[in-house]
Image 1 (cartoon, rainbow, N blue to C red):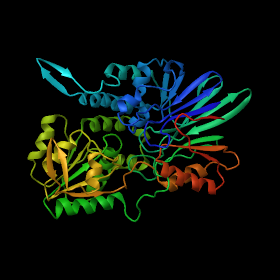
Image 2 (image 1 turned 30 degrees about the horizontal axis):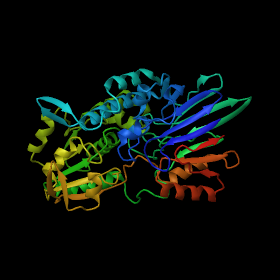
Image 3 (image 1 turned 180 degrees about the vertical axis):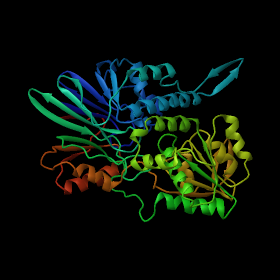
Image 4 (image 1 turned 60 degrees about the horizontal axis):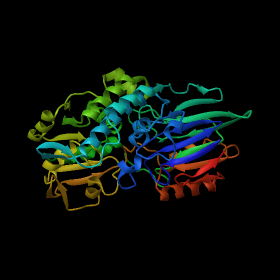
Length: 461
């Protein structure tokens, strides 16, 4: 059995690992790599023949794990894609959204007739629908026999609805070996999502390391942080609170938390707009798979109704409704995407409010270097929007209390579930090198054997 790490090697995006055993090739995740220059170019060349892959196993829907599946199919992959039911539904939404992003990067030019310039799309809607047709869904904690010698179990890890660790039991020449891929590990007590479940003992573990060496903020809760920010921005002052939020996962957790705050009467009513069509569709997926949300969310539903609907909450549907928010003159909260401000309707709200002294922009997620969100967070006094240089008069704030990733202690706890004597090696992926080294050092001090694979490095198991 051989493990090759082809993505998220000493970086965060592009998750993709290849497991080869007795003439059978398993690809775990097939994500978009955003970190090597022009990612469209980087993602259309696989280091193996897609037609040689027998099956793909998908840990969760986020685009850095699922986003290159249509390219894999376009280039010859003919097998099934195994995932949980919510992962299939959310992946369809995100992949269709990716097509829109690709097409938007091709600028229209008019010279008698319309032409498109810029990079050709990685894939089109028809390739996404071919991908969706390949999904085979499997519930949590149910053993699925892939073939005569390989069995698969999905274990819930929080992070996103449907997100799972992959546990494989593989028999070779009469010997059974086990290997687990954590995918992205969530946090305990996260709004809407259940806590990560412990993994069974395995021989090998491929573990994410996003927050290696880093701890989340303590001493306050997300409820307290939101109450403080809303009070300052919308109640003491007649201002606007703009919250850039990823449409899938982050928005649903934020809306549920706001519902709890206002239903308890902790704040006077404030108008809230959720301005993201993708978030609207994703929220319907959360409703569809309600049996998989946290016990807290289920209890709230039984006592007070839909977690994602309440008085003074408005979901916008079309561009006209989105633009009408600009004419709403009372204090309000605007939740919109994209989370790093690199596109989407959030840019409209920024354009009209970045020079508003009474506006606060609250970041609740990670912003990659070089993005507009990153520039605001580092304190740039002027930013460029719609070909205009705008002074930043709005207040910029950030909290990591809604981060969907477990921190260093959560990662350590995940590995500590494995007996040192049985676990032969931990492979660290999905993290910056600094995070991986901090995580590896802590694990080695506790007696674990650790490897930090380079891209394309192969290990015999």
